[in-house]
Image (cartoon, rainbow over all chains, first blue to last red; front, side, top):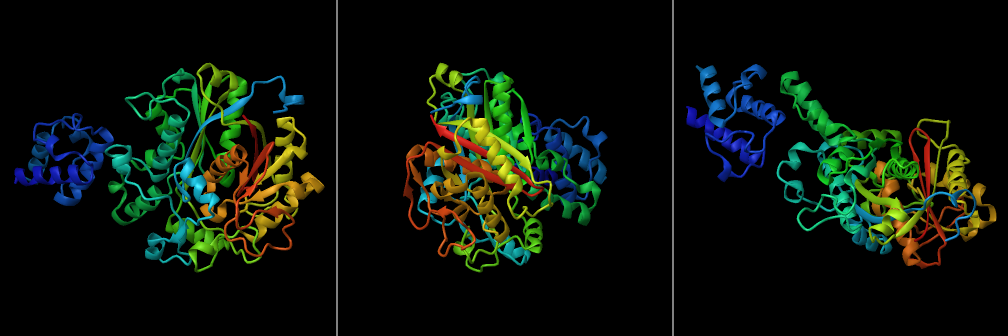
Length: 78
Length: 425
């Protein structure tokens, strides 16, 4: 399940945010990938459409890496 | 160039670079060549066909990939009008000799803290509105992109040019609708005279071709219904029936002659005079006698400190609407009287369509090029000149003319008028 979410994030980042696939790994921070806080909010909107899980603003506060986001979504998917 | 009277005591403001992206082409020189050749930039627009608007033609700039040309994420984070601003700005700073080897945007060779940006835009991020509002209605407030406001704001073009070039001088966006590009140059000129900046990137950008804007212009009866895209924009022709909507941008580098010379730049022309006025008449229609435009032109001549008889060429607003072109003809005659017969007139909108807030800046670029080369482009699609248009409008082929001073006029919805006069460098 977590791998699915990571794949989904990777797909969104490469296709919609233009991030080079080679730069993407589970432990990469959004900052390192060139995404600012507005980009991360946008990413969560696309993720919501694809996974049905919405990460709220306060839940994003300690999300730094892709793995952090995957974990949060997995947590909410229960 | 003679600069008697009011102009003698103040610094001369020169143009040292231009960047243009227009339906006539990518770049200042390419656009100029297609304007000279009267090659129409109009085509059937797939977006408009798809949206089912009653008018489906437009004048688009040559296709480009924002991510490839302006950096990853540009397509998603910036509206199309900001892409156009960046492409015009990049060419302008290079043309003015302001870029180093490493970075194509960053201004070098002058203090960036003293470089201002003055841009005109009538509509701002029209495409962003068109994309985001349906999302808000269809999916709800929780799905609205956080990028909506920053992308859509009409001052984002100027702001983004500053981010890329490092220019930290005054940075403002002016809106006088279809006169905005010219008004921005007016404002920039005033900053330079006031000493608020050493240099200003000034011009206009517009990317307002959306189903909604075309639908409303069509409802107004402002757009041509001609089914043949290439002959639809026909300023001053008896069969003209409206304008063709266009997109594009032009940015000039303006500075004092002293500043240009100190950094070894070559002036292209002098921005000798500027004039602005309001019709105080109607939201969209010009007064029949061209009232407000008369004032703007007179003010520009007075500001330049030249004789009206020195004006040898007008790049007219010439939108190809029945009302505008007739009013403009009357305005010119009431300013210049018999000298009107000796002003060589063109409307480059026959090629470019109407670039709205970018029109004044793009046309200023063409007026400067006419001045430099001593040649006035023909008005594309002008076959039978309207007998009510009592002007010497160039037809078919470019005409060679020795020019002392050229005039470019712009009139915006809202009744706002701008006139710019350029003289040789």
